[in-house]
Image (spheres, rainbow, N blue to C red):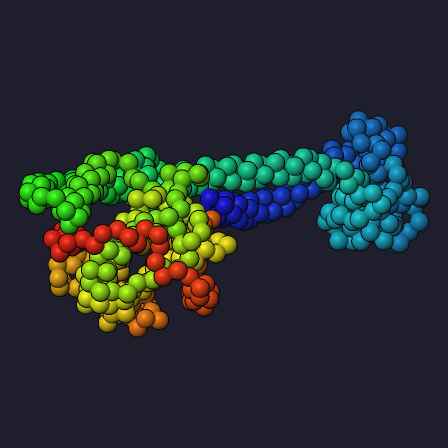
Length: 484
C-alpha cells in the first residue's frame, strides 16, 4: 500500500507539473521574444523624429550614436526623386545593413514594419516618412541572445519547482503510506503473535480511523480469547477437583479389600488415578501453555513407553482373553514428546480398544522408526469406526457408553505439537487402525504416505509380548475405574 500511494502521487504530480510547466515555458519564450522586438521598436522610434526633420548624414549618424545602438541599427534613405523615377542623387545608408535590398524595398512598398531572419538573429524594418514624401527604412538588429534572454533561467526555475513539487508530493505520500501501513503491519504482527499462542499480544490504537477501530476490535477479541481460555482452565480444574470425592471413597473401599494381588492392584490403580487428577488440576491452573517438548533435549524413548504401557494393558488383555502383539519396541526410539503425553495418548487409544470392542478382540501396537518421523500404529480386530471425522472432533463422542470424544483429541494434539498428525483407517486385523505420525524435525505434517508396507515388513520376526507383560491382571473393579 505504501509504494502504491507513492506511485500514484508521483504519477499525478508529474502530470500536473507537465501540464502547467510546458505551456508556461512556451509563454515565457514568447514573452522574451516580444520584449526584444519591443525594445527594437523603441530604438527605431527614437530615430524617426530626426528623419522627419533632416536627411543630413552627419546629423543622422549622431542621432543613431545617441540612441546607443549604432552597432545594431542602420538607416536606409532612398535617393531624392527615386519614387518619381528621376535621378536626383545617391541613396544614403547609415550603419551596417543586414537585411536584403528586396526586404527593404518590400517594406517601403508596404509602408508597415516587418521582421526578417538574418544570420545570428533577426532584424526589425521600420518605415519612416521623410519631409520630401519619400520612405526611409530604419533597420534594428535583434540578436538571438536578446530573443532568448532569461528563457533558460526561467525554464530552470520551472524545472526546479516541478522537481520540488514531485519530491514533496512523494515525501507526503510516503509519510501518509507509513501512517497507514505501520498500524496495519502491527495489526498483522499482533494476529500472528496471538495465533502462535502469545496471549499477551495487543495492538496500539493509532493510525486512520478505520485501522483504529480494527485495533480496538482486535484487542477486544484478544481479551475475550484470554478470558475464554482462563474460564476453560478453571472449568477443567473444577471438574477435576470434583473427582476427588469419589476417589476418596474408592481409596477407602480399596483399603478394606485386604491383601492379595487384586487388592494391591486396585489400590495402585486408585493411587495412579489420584496422581493423574492432581496433575490435571495443576496443569489447568497454570496460565502458561504447555508444549509437548520443553526444549531441544526434551523427549522420551517411545519404545520404553510402549513396553511399559503394554505391560499394564496386557494383564487386562489376558483377563479378557484378548490376543495382543507389540512390534518395533525392542530398540530405543527417541521422540520430541514428553513421556507423560505419550503415555496418556497410548492409554487413551488402548482404553478405547477395551471400552468399545467386545472381550476377546485382538489388538496390536506397532512402532516404526523412520529417518524424519516415528509412526505408532494402534489397531484392533473390532467392528471399526463408521465416522472417523466425528471421532476426531473434540467433545463429539458417539454418546454411547459415556464416551466424551476427548481421547482421540489428546492423541491429535500430542502429534500436532511435533508437526505430525493422526489418521484413522482400517487395520489388517479387520477393525480400526489409528496412525500417529510424530515428526522428528518439527516440520509440518506430511501428506499421506505409503507407510503400511514398511511397518508390515518390520512386524515379521517380532516378539509377541514385551518383558513387562508379566504384570498381574487387574480385577473387574480396577477395570471399571479406568475410562480412557
